[in-house]
Length: 465
Image (cartoon, rainbow, N blue to C red; front, side, top):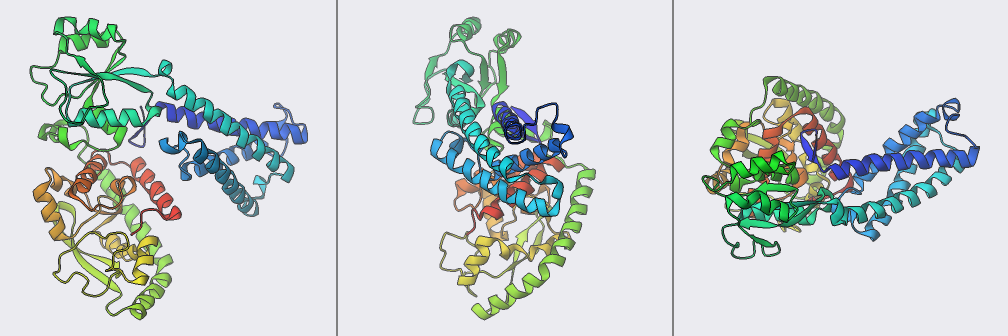
């Protein structure tokens, strides 16, 4: 795993991105050679062709990200992959056409562009098929052993089996006895050897990586044998830490107070707080200046569409558990919650007005939160605030829930871009794992990545209710 922006990416995915950048650059050069007869040594002499190639490659990589071409499901589906590569190239051409009018130096001739599209399309499809076959090959995967059983082991097994790009092949798990129920039913149980033969056991099964996923390690961890295995080149990982890297969230089943107390993270530096506040003030001022005319029109449409005020106000919980008043455009009928209790919104919720459904799908109902951000009750990035009664109920049912109040809430956040809406208690438990991951790893890079993912969701219209 490679850490970028305080987020871990599979090494194979990073290699795929870099190799596809090379494929795009090479096909541009081959297309230039075929159309103009330009050789590799001559390219710099021809109207900054190297600059054009770099620009085109950058545009394509951004488009590939927005078309989910690095998503595991899309990567291993031939039909989706081919369709999205064609869509990506079409979108890239539109962007290049617009860029030409703004920056004429980016111009590509029609013949060069057509030749490159054909070569790039074929090159990317062929290379991706080869990459997928190599990824699926056990020869190029690390044989991995889970040491322990239980919920964490089951989550790790699901992550490893569903993501071939991790480059791991699950050999099985070791525990005093087979796991009961269906937690590890698809994973091979290997008889637990004595500590004295554990190293030989790893060699006989050709294990290259051991992930410690034991619920209770006291007295049950073969420490000396694991140290010997590590000295022989076998990777040894802590299960909770490895799961954070793979899933991008904290595993609550293995979270202990000592982890919150002694581990890195869970503490935002004063400099980072100043930076976040400065960005929030500048962003909210610019956003309000641009959005006020649109907000005025939306307010009029809401008032004409249904009875009640245009702005919805609700008490929500902010930093340090302190309540504040959140502003949104009203998307429901007045008095939709007769008992005054806030409830999650469902798909095609009858409480929503016709205008409100459109506002929620487009996320325009969130625009008044710019005032909350400007006043300092919220940041752009942070855990999503819930109504006070919902927060109190969840804090009572979910351990460590109040830890998400360590930072200011945000209009968007890591949990929002990774999880979306929450309806059940299990959804909120999973969401808390993402919120704690963000608090533990908060940084400028992670905030920037969240903004990119948020923009992707808004442009593609995903997840709105």
